[in-house]
Image (tube, rainbow, N blue to C red; front, top):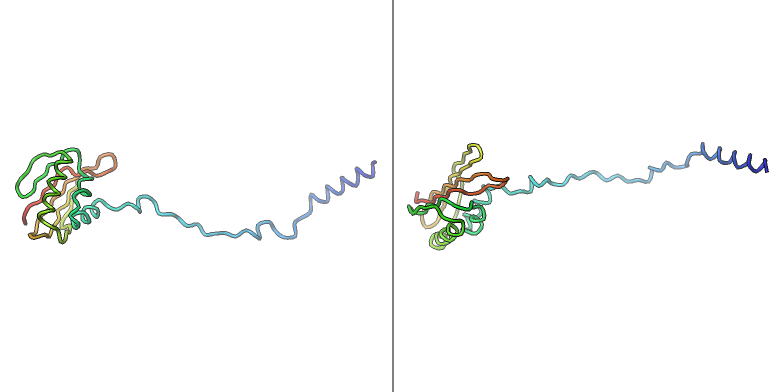
Amino acid sequence: MKNYVLFIALLINGMAFAQPAEPEFAHVEYDPIVREETSLLQQVSFESKMVAAFKAGNADKIASHFSENVDLSIDGKEDLYSKSQAEQILKTFFATHKPNDFKIVHKGKSGQSEYFIGELSASKVYRVTINSKTNGGSKKITSLTIEEN
């Protein structure tokens, strides 16, 4: 019995110092780490959304960025409108003045407020001024003016 215990002890002791013939990591393949785009890179800027919406005459897209009440002035008619009223007035404007092009000619910022001035080409050329305010991480249009240039 002593011989068996001695034999097993030597066998276990010998296995403790044994090394594998091939390292375990030799068969592991490494893939390069590909970094996914962050949500910030995926976001389209507020200005480019407005440029696309004005070019297309898309009042729905523009109105989706209106604050609850919007100071709206179109062709000299100005007032404070609710979001839905301002959207309807803008739809009427685009129905009678089909846009051809829109480009930003000037922009500025002061604190949480931003503005930009654009040029809308339709049957006539119009000057568009948009004032927006950042609230809760999103920009909301507080004032929109469209006047003949």
